[in-house]
Length: 171
Image (cartoon, rainbow, N blue to C red):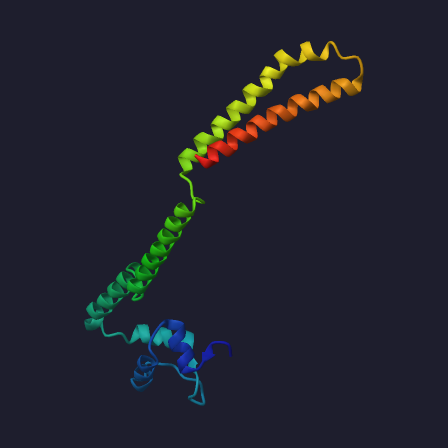
């Protein structure tokens, strides 16, 4: 029968110590299989409930209350967990300090502002092309000349932008 389990399994199923299940068996509060080796779980739970000592209800409530507090409170390893978190934070801080000294760590706000400045510069450079290029292109006669003029203007724009980025990174 699937309802028949060893005493140790019955204890695990209920979250009890094996010694408590042994006490229940000695007290005749478990329903055992015919050979006396297995606990009939459902029937045993009913018998345990029926044979509870009403005078011991306060003890049961106290144990349940303690169990719920333990479940809500940090585990016994909370000290070790806190220590691990602290050590990890210290290691992270040391890595950041080293990266800052090497110049590989930047302030996020400064980086955002720098990116916005580069973007604005790129946009205004592109917009200025519409004022400059028509005058240059109108005098050209072939597609190859027009293409060469466009490439030259784009390369100049991108070169200026690269210089701005390099100077900004070095600063």
